[in-house]
Amino acid sequence: MIVSPAFAGKRYAVLGLARSGMTAVETLLASGAHVMAWDNRDEPRQVLAGRVELADPVTADISGYDGVVVSPGIPLNRHPIASAAQRAGVPVIGDIELFALARSSLPAHRVVGITGTNGKSTTTSLVHHLLEKAGVPVRMGGNIGVPILGTDPLPEGGVYVLELSSYQIDLTQNLDCEVAALLNITPDHLDRYDGFAAYAASKARLFTMQGAGHDAIFGSGDAETAAIASAEADRRGLDHVRVVDGAKLTTLQKKWPSLQGPHNLQNAAVAVAIVEALGIKPEQWKRAIRTFRGLPHRMERVAEADGVFYINDSKATNPASAAPALAAFPPDPEPRIHWIVGGLPKGDDLDECAPYFGNLAAAYTIGDAGPRFAEILAPHTQVHRSEMMAEAIREAMAAAKPGDVVMLSPACASFDQFRDYEARGEVFRQIVEALLAPEEEEEA
Image 1 (spheres, rainbow, N blue to C red):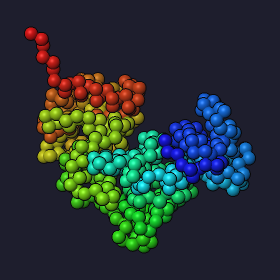
Image 2: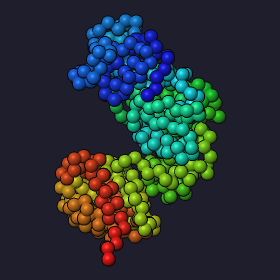
Image 3: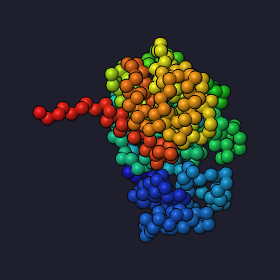
């Protein structure tokens, strides 16, 4: 856990006692702060009984407090805590701001902040992987993994890699990242903002918190990201601003099974630019990127055998989210995807996937959607009506040739056969590993 003398003797209120809120409470208490805490649920309040002042900061007197720490999930444009804090003259902050305030008491380190509408988790995980393989002490947190305050402080020379949502940036005032990156901006979360421009401005704040001598990296592809990149180039000069498009990495991408497709080429390009800004050499990241396995259940490479890759994309719970996975493996030169598809359907078609049916070597339909999907796919590829996951994997494994990909990307919810998409992905992994395991020799 990160503690800091910066909080000693100060007073903070914490609203929302899920993972990040509870971790913030523990950090503040261990640092010698007075803490008021509240959650609508009784269980977390009971955990803290006798250790904090249990009161709702919306109605309690918080005059003179140093901050109200709220969960990123609390909508400040609708929740009464915003006006209550304003009346009391108390800033509304998040756990990332507490981390920023604690930095001065930590061993010398650097911080990477990564934001964007899409691709944040993959890029953050990849940066963590590349630094770790290069021997750099590294921690990952923010909008991914464990709350950053709950991690042990890094030794001198370490790097904290933070995935940051717009909500987290809204609650942060002093995070000066040595390297900050913006992947893209597309309309999202507009119920929390006064229009798309306000959402884009939230992302831009990550860079306005940076010192002029620190590095800013931007993806290419949308006007809003380009506008922020241009503004930052004007503010700090071109030496510290990079816009990357991934073109130089295209020939290498074939060797990255968990980073296929145009979207992952952009993610990889940003990640490479980040680690190069931190001093990682091309020979280091080129070696390490080939071993990146991806996020669990999202284009995750679970195995490779006899030249065949096995990909778990169980998080693709609708056709729109499965389409990028199909696009990621074009013919080389023949169609090479053995697509395991089906489950509890969210619609009656596969229209979003249709542009990539030419990439299919075969389809293996499972679950409630199996019969309908088999009808849709039969004119375009060979179809196996497998029904069950294990049978689909066996049939795909028997048919796949070196260079092919056996991929679970169901385009459906999981609830007809599995508890959730994570359970479905774990079953895929377990069956693949079991079928690939060498048979034990019979005892004589």
